[in-house]
Length: 69
Image (tube, rainbow, N blue to C red; front, side, top):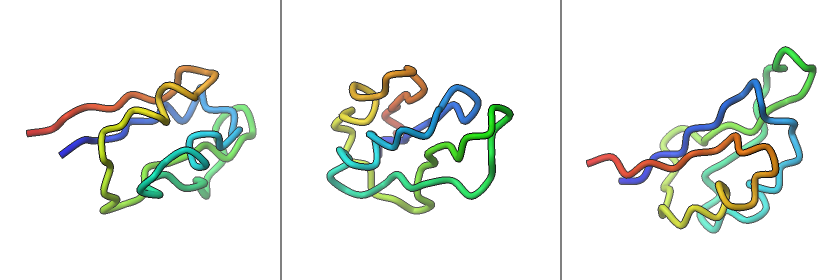
């Protein structure tokens, strides 16, 4: 099952990843990062399809998608 990893310190909260995720597996985080942004966060128990759309659209390169077996 694929796994989304988001670097909360480099995320600037543009939320493009949330818009492109077909499974809605990414949401707005509640905590602020050190730069004052609410970073995107993977949804707990979300069903990532592994399409990597979030990773591709991220302007800060803050997202990686791994295939966990």
